Image (tube, rainbow, N blue to C red):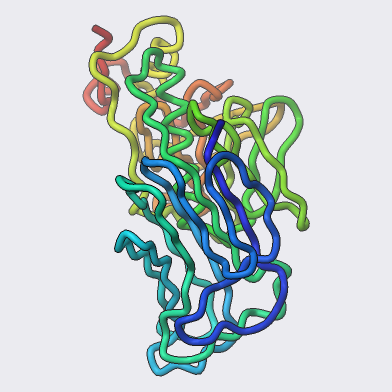
Length: 319
């Protein structure tokens, strides 16, 4: 059984200095993770590594140091988020390594004054906990692409918590909302959870064809990507994914279709193994993340001879 917890706070109020944030809505609670709805304390009852993501919105903080919240663990781990202003949203992301269970964690007001939660938002705070799964080696290139997608989504959740994104799936469907969490089973991450009009929607990773970060968004250069597996897997999926990787030079103009009549046009801003990023300009504005094998048609601008193209492309050799 998977170990996962997803909680939210929807009631307004305040959190005094050194007090815990008490979440009033438990959306998902599975496995051995337990939550105390009176104290706001979470208990990790199994040995392992836990991925923790939290977000909180404040409208005022009576503090000389701005808004500061921290996830504090009984084993000494501390995941802090802070802002120099008192009207802001704060996020935190980290790993708690439980080598001797149980370990308790809590989200605490670490400023030197009372924090007032935002009254204009439906959700005041959220927190998700899931046990990190050791996925082992990638035995197929498609499996590696799914791991790359999960890796990118986990960073989108942290770096763009308030963005209204569009998640496109196979067919004519897409979901628009804010990124919330990755839902994982004991085998690994499998669902991207998005909040749309106060409704939680879960999207299987294998159905995702693209993630559009929305108008006004800018690519965050801190996003990292998984390194290619060694040795590279072989098969049809390896041929497709490595060919997309080889075919599109970074900074080249392109239109990439990822569904029926849906595409992203502009420039290839990033081309990592298993993942394309297309932006409207070379400054990284309005990025769209596209898993390589979901590129149904690739249109490139300009004419480039075969010999010229070879010098500009990075090549991956299949062993």
